[in-house]
Image (cartoon, rainbow, N blue to C red; front, side, top):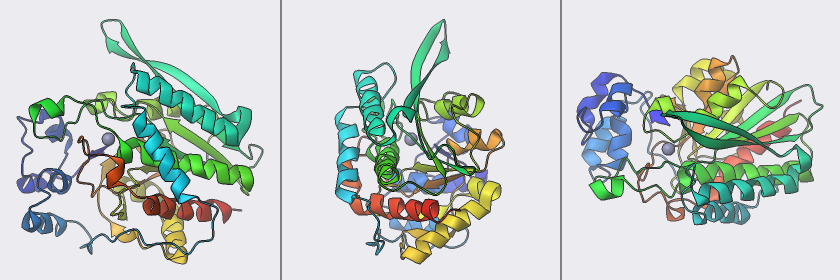
Length: 343
Ligand SMILES: [Zn+2]
């Protein structure tokens, strides 16, 4: 995903320049995330950037233990996060990509049976080369009138763009938070839906090619494909999870989501408040391009739950050590409440 903010934010950037990151600069990747990545030890710069956000945020809080009595197994979910990372980078045309795809589909099948399927597609790279990709789809309560789509991306960034060291930049990221966290939560939710059928239809779609890049013309590839050729009925709304495993979890309403479907954000933040999950922060913070935008462009309601205050974003340090079972459970509990409260 990419962060978009007005150009005036660039003056707070500590190492982004249009020369070093022409594409990122062009599309508006901006200071607060960079402060989190490149200047994470610069607290005064960080507070300057945070003062630019609206409304003025409190310091992100650690994911509080929730009192929700859901069946969400935090340790199993965290094990699923680590399992994905252990496959290696999930980059198209790599062994890790293929192996992880097959493992995820196998896990979905255990919960969703034969509704769990691959949606294969290819993306042209020019010169006749094509990248094979797969979205992974599963469905619960397919006959229900109301349908909710829960989604995340399962691929990982081929290059650690946010590293400073030139050699490290060329290497693929582990993608513990950026990739594996959302998938892990949705695999666990699938188990819950199998054990206790939801009152509405639930579609789970795990997108490939979100982070291929390097530019946005080669990102959100699975979501773009799915928005055009959806495998399941049009959902009433979609909730996207991305980078929700940070051990210092703080999720703010995202601006593109708020503009498109504030009522869905309300459902989520109300559920978090009811459960006492304090990781969901009041107010809007970042404006982010992510897999929800192709869905919105198709005319669907879609919101993105994302914690963009994540220092290791697109670095080699995006490892399980940066994530926590409690954060995964906080998000899973809130999502479960939203789904099971639907009528
Ligand atoms: Zn990413």
